[in-house]
Image 1 (cartoon, rainbow over the protein chains, first blue to last red):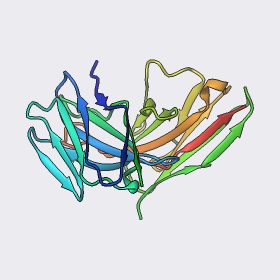
Image 2: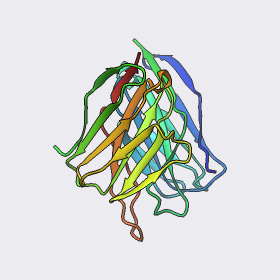
Image 3: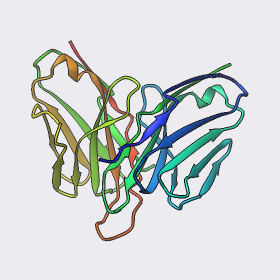
Image 4: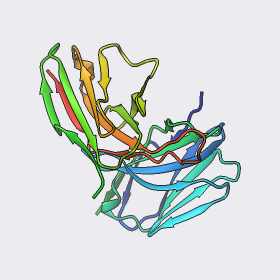
Length: 113
Length: 117
């Protein structure tokens, strides 16, 4: 069974601080996605990483896929209150072609003004 | 804009009273999913349709059923809701063709928040 472990589970920081969220597994994934979910809404896809070592940037957010495709990180620079939400990583199995994702348990981020 | 729509957004029902949640999509995606999400937890997959093929998760209670009358619509039926079924129910879609390379990016609706009293 493939598992994705996210850390930290909860994170409360002040506006302007930097933070990193981690997503780790002992399994290899063919791709990994990051979603952000705001309270009372559905998750919204932020990025998909597919190549080992890949780095993608989305404004103040930087996503990295580990060289072995077993882990990923999300780094936010100068966090803002609008970044508050539940961040979920989700992986697609190594064999690919599966229509199911493995979700991490999420990191609940609160950015205080 | 292409999107995933869920109705109703909020539903309150009585213990044991059947309830149906609906999902529609304009993305023309062939795969549709139903997830259950409890407070600040990851979504838990209940079942999904790959085209017309229904795929149930092993730990999904029999109390939960689904119908997909056509590509655009999918329904979640809870036959006898219990207090533990209070949760957010999320519908998602993706495009996936076996044998082809897709990254299974899922597009979620806004969810239906179900409260069982």
